[in-house]
Length: 332
Ligand code: ATP
Ligand code: MG
Image 1 (tube, rainbow, N blue to C red):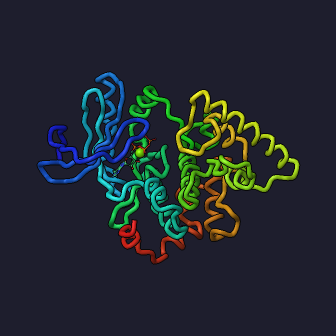
Image 2 (cartoon, helix red, strand yellow):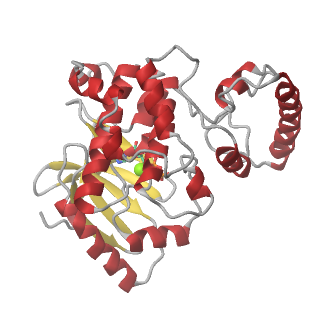
Image 3 (cartoon, rainbow, N blue to C red):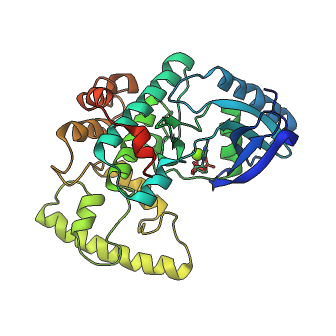
């Protein structure tokens, strides 16, 4: 279909992100329901044309694990991207509504994301660049699909010029300025899976209101600290608290609720501290722990690619496991 702005009737708001907003729309001539993403960019007409040209590759992306593309157009000064509408929304919304997601379903999610990433990379040489729960969509047929991948270099540049978004799903090597590779997507997948299984962002500090250290160990520092570290942790914690108060009074707060680290501290933490894990030990199947540990290997050269991860025991099990995702969809 040849999409025109005038043919779209707005039905509702689906959500708002850093770079724009997403609306539920009806394509009136065909009656088709779509999601329309409005990308706020401030670019020259020539750049906008280039972006539209680059987005055309989306027409050739066909996979059950990728949200399909219906078309894109310029709506001065923005760019609109129309895609398949997922009626159950994104996984961040789902877990925030229902709490931690059952580990067997998380296995199915891992499988779908890996299939999607492998398809994008092997067939189209595309790296996703923004894997996180809000970019993994779900529908009432029980399908899991990824969206918002970086097809247009020009669009990536324009967005980077327009706003500063700090992704906390970013891999240690990216934080340190290394090139984006498909391994960075794997890191982001690992963080996302822990978030879904625990029902909270793994770097957030759930104990922000009390001084109990146990939560901090479980979230920020996955390995039990030695007595010495415990002491310094306690000191750190006290410092952190003081800083938090200061931040509060300055009116600087971070998105994501109970987060007590500043973005800079968080990025430093990702680079310097051991990666988060599926905790507590023993709560989840060993195969799931092994898989997530491999996604979160800090050295990208040692970290497996999506194609390799498809062969992991947890993923092979997820593939053959008989879980009715359509039935699950009807409960959420
Ligand atoms: P960021 O801007 O940091 O990438 P985000 O992914 O949440 O964050 P958007 O991509 O603008 O931001 O999406 C906003 C919300 O709209 C998402 O969280 C998701 O819930 C919803 N959404 C996006 N695309 C679709 C879609 N195709 N179908 C249904 N809901 C969608
Ligand atoms: Mg998104």
